[in-house]
Length: 244
Image (cartoon, rainbow, N blue to C red):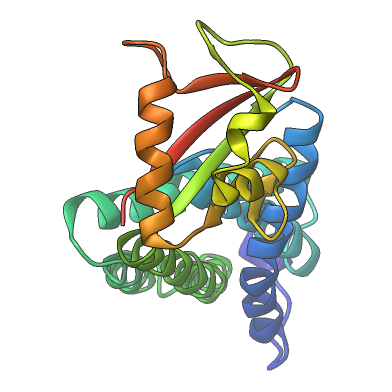
């Protein structure tokens, strides 16, 4: 990185880096849905939280390329460094500590150390400050989403549905007539009013009593020792229950 190529920092530059942190999460949901619909990449669990960091790293490298040093090699280096650093901070914070704000603390500590070490390097100083504001923003958003999801998981009952075109292992069959006594299951299978991860995966909040009654029914119909995979009206579904 050559400091001679740097430009004078403007007051409006850092708000733009904050903006990419804000936009990274909705962009990740949008592109994640597209990739899933094309069966290219299906994100589940922790990967749903890490994908926004990938998007943020791409936008961050693009902006730093635009503002500072217009070199493809430079942009690629920035992307790799920001991606590895942000994922490391996030996973260390999540797995080593019980609260989501620890990634923010780790980010601030690391940024302060690097700024102190490279205080005489203008380009490095700018990059670190830009990185901090971008990823501080996305960490706040991802962390808030993580906490909201954990709260909803603990406080609410839901039926989760995954739809397949072909069976993935042994399956049991459910007749349409059997579903009439379980309106919550019918609603969950239709996807109407449910929260969708993509077109093949969603979950639906239900009344706790109905949730319990439905879970007993599915357990009784499930083939012994197999995954909760069912063939219903010619289609295949994996039916799960999010514990209240």
